[in-house]
Length: 355
Image (cartoon, rainbow, N blue to C red; front, side, top):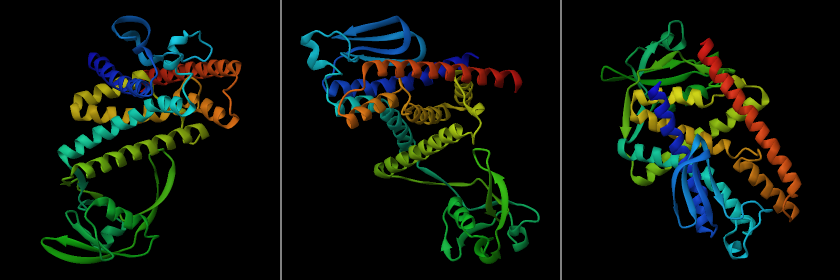
């Protein structure tokens, strides 16, 4: 339990710090004064004031915030502070400051993956057969465990994913596989079979397979810094894409909302990753950082996406959203988030009690 709690504090601390740091840095660059930089909500536990900014740790470690000068359009403001006021800045500047938090979360993921690929290289699964299923096309064609697929339809393949793509896109037509076996290349013809299976969302999908599993053997490709950045960005994009798709499927009812987890689940998973090793925990941070960045862009008032929605309305209407409407929207947003928090805690507790 202590490992879970410590891991949760570390994970949330890093994610919140990076998110708020994004708001803070861009605000300072664009000339906006920052009154408070807080990790956590609620009462101040300790901190230090440097210049006009109070850097603090607060009691409730489930978030954080950056309090900027003139952040609220209706707040009373000394005229001398007007140049530092958030609400006195242009629409583009305000949008950049709000967008910076989620962007920094995505950048954290890119940096983590870049560091891994730069230090350890890019792992690629070999197109090597680990096992052959009985009664499936590969067995009928004479494929054996230990065979190394060197080409499909005459096209060289260097990794498992390349070979799997040929099979997936075959449409059920026969494929010629060139196999390296005992130092000799042999060719076999195999006709992929369409089967029904579940995807990562638990949906039933039809796909073409030949009935083999990978041996799990990997090669490592060394990357230069530019290639590592590209791969880190690609990995982050794939996680972001999966997150967006998951949210869309939850909203449409395709994916059960019971899959949503809260702090308790994060603590459990963080503890498990910490026990598995520091590398696993760092990858877990990268995954959650992408999730946090994407979810913060949802158009819900009080989230960054809600503020960006207000700015979009302002850009279209050429005037700020009515203050009363903003207040009502913020109250609705807070209510929605409270309901969501209650629900995720219920999900977390149900997992503990019934699993």
